[in-house]
Image (cartoon, one colour):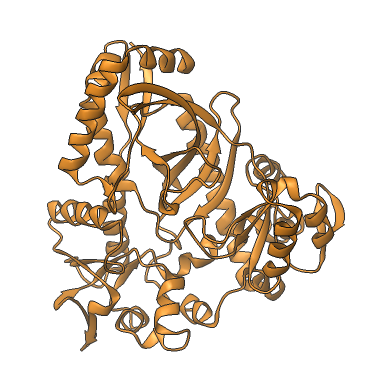
Length: 453
């Protein structure tokens, strides 16, 4: 059904219809301020379409991966040798031991993956467990698409269902606040650096929270102050922090030793705020979490059963911390560095704690000299080497020079998780391998579930 639906959608567009829908979409993006900085978040004319069975598969697999990841982290925190692989900084170690006031380490997260709905292949590339973005953008973009003429016509043949992610994010913030339980009246602050291209999404979440009766301030860490066991955001008392600032950047800006003396650190240490996500999300966020979930020895020690290990092997790419050590690959003992040199065409290198495609070296797109240089540099700071995954592609329509153009694009599928359950999904498109809007290219599209009428 899905292939037929996509073909039918494309058949509804010609040059004139594409221009009409492109103009309508552009106007909706302007009205909703749906921009990443100055770039529109969407430049194509078709949403991601999935059947209910595809979405159910995503939900089931993601839940099992998330549960196994938490099991692996629990073991890792108690095992010095495994913990050493994660390469926590002194500041991260100091923050990890502090009580968040609620149990879930990563209340909202995103599992970035390639899901090929033609073959059924689902392979994850990283776990964004600390500060996932895009939820409000996706929901507003869904509404913009539902109003397009082509979607109205498509809806005559197919029932289309939006899967919102922003409402469960707001609900999760309030759930964690009530579990924290030190106040009955949430007063929220959305905290990240000034001048970021995601400012429009902060504005949307401020609106959503205030619609729930929660006074909300958008501010930077510099605009926080702390006195008499109360945190102030731009002069307003707050007790619920929607933390969009990344822990690594917070520690880099204020220092590994001094960050706990920052107003945010002091308020968190004193239990004066409910911080979502808490600093305890950091282990899940490290790229090396997939190293734990692809190493049978670690999974055995963590008590992850063999059935789950078999499932993980289908969806988690082989990942190891870059070190001069011996390890295993497909059940065989290998010399890690020699293996990485010999099989460059199936591997890539990633910083253990980075985002937006920064610092990644793709083996199959690099010369031997570039790969060897990157591999040696990866020994100097925490990096992981990861096996190439199956990449998903689909055709998407776009207006180019006033004419309809349908072109092939890489498609990633990034389900949002609240606790360990999936609700909503970010979809990004690109014509290059590094598929990330923050890296400066590509497009996002909303995801809809469809069924024949």
